Every structure is written in C-alpha cells, then in structure tokens.
Amino acid sequence: MLPDLKTLLVVNPHAGKGRGRRVLPAVREFLQRGLPGLETRVSEYAGHAFEIGREAAREGFERVLCLGGDGTPFEVVNGLYAGGRPARPPELGLIPAGTGNSFLRDFAVRSWRQAAGGILEGRRRRVDLMEVEYEDGGQRLRRYCLNLLGVGLIADILKLTNEKLKGFGRFSYSLAVMLRLARGLRNRLRLDLDGDRLEIADSALVVCNSKFTGGAMKIAPMADTQDGQADLVVFQEVNRRDILAIFSRVFAGSHVGHPKVRALRAAAIVVDAAPPLRLMADGELLGGTPLRLRVLPGELTVLA
Image 1 (cartoon, rainbow, N blue to C red):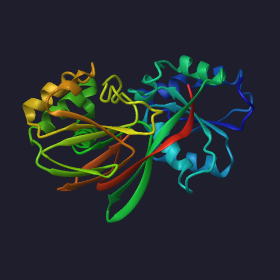
Image 2 (cartoon, rainbow, N blue to C red; image 1 turned 135 degrees about the horizontal axis):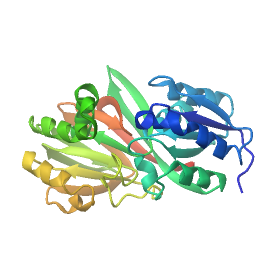
Image 3 (cartoon, helix red, strand yellow; image 1 turned 45 degrees about the horizontal axis):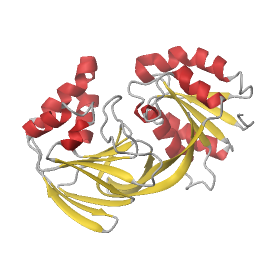
Image 4 (cartoon, one colour; image 1 turned 30 degrees about the vertical axis):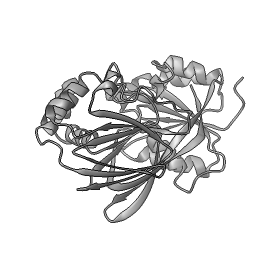
C-alpha cells in the first residue's frame, strides 16, 4: 500500500530524444490514480533538475519521482543533498524515459509503465549511494551517484561523444571509443581500497554501485546495490587491442574474465593519478582526480 506522502514528479522532457515529453501525459495520468496530490515540475535546461531537487528538499517533499534517463536522478539527488546529507532522504522513484536507463536494469525494470506500476504498488528497495569528493578548478567538490563513476577512459569517451560526435546517432559512442583509443593510455594510478594500497600503470577504472552502464553494457556483473560496497573494474596496463577485446565482451559481462581486467571491491576508495584523470558520474562529466569515494549503505529508498 502506498502511503500518502507529499510527492513531486520531476520531468526531463529532453530525455531519450524527446521521449520524456512524449510520455509525460500518460505517465502523469497513470500516477494520479494513486497519487491525486501529485505535483509536477519540468526541467528546462541542463542543471535545472538539480535546482528542482534543492527546492524539493526545502519544501519538504517526502517522495520524489524522476521521469528521464540516468542523468535526471543524478541531478535530483544532488539537489536534495545540496544543503547537507538529509537525516531522512525522500523516497526516490525512477521512471525510465532516457536512452540508457541503466540503474533500473538491475531490477529488471524496462518500461515507464512497469516502473510507475511498481511505484503505485509501493515496492521499495533500500539501495546504497556513493559519495564522491573530487577536484574541479582548484576546488574540492562533493557529489552523489547511484550508478557508477568512471575514471579516465570512459569519461574521455563521454566528453568526445557529447562535444563532437552526437550527430552520428547510435554510432557516436562506438566511434568515440575508436578515436579515443588512437591516443592510447599513458598514466599511473595510485589506489587505496579500505586501507589496501595498489599502484597500476596505463589503466582505466570504473567504480560501480550497480551492474549496467550505457543501457545494456554489463560493466560490473558482480555488483549489488545493497551490499554496502562499490565494485571496481580495472582495465590494467591495456593497449588498444586489449580495450577492443574487452569492449566486445562487455554486453555479456564476460569481459571480467579477460586477463587484463581486475575486479575489486571496497567501501572507501581513494584514487590519485598522474597525470590527473577526468571523471564521469552517472553519465555526467565532473572534474578530475584526486578523488575520495565512500559508500553510504542503504542510504536511499528506491521505488521500482
């Protein structure tokens, strides 16, 4: 049974190339059957959902629903936490309308109707949240992510896709992979994982709270959103041929068996890199290393 809580629906109309806007009338009509007092706010520009999340925290909303892709809950959650970590975070509902909708795949939720039905039925899951501190323009900043944090290669690929290759449609990401790999990897990473120290060269790193990224890419098949730990996938001392072989297996999750892929796990992580590496969280570009990450066990109640 769904309790009567003050509820806000945050909509990204641009998610999924306008799918958020197209499905909004049906989603709102469906939800209002069980949530007659539902309020709706539409994100009008990049970063607006962050502001809406901050307003929702100030206005005392007890349940916040997000209609969009993975970037929408990222902005909303960080808005909710902008004034400090809340003693009792609002319940969070995720309704897929984006391109990837990666986080919900861990729960076998694929459609907006399936997600909205789970919300109205009151299906709840306690999930972990990753808190990240990083460098950006000489400042130390803090963000929170549900899905994953990419260090280096994956963040570079996203930046290249967003800035130069979006016109290539579904081929844009694959093309960005090829172009980025042409430069190779030249770096040295120093990791502290729950006090255990590790140094690796010419590597890339993904820190995961859930299994999927980019839609159906099973980047961390061993991840569990409720285990109080983050799962690290390290591409260690890889060349271009290695990366291509790894990426060819990532949809099945079998890449973790590649000899140059390491799977690690920790609740508190420190990463430093020379040279500093770019970061990506839940599909959004951040600053760079050095970073500190800690897992907040069972921090959020997700409706799905």
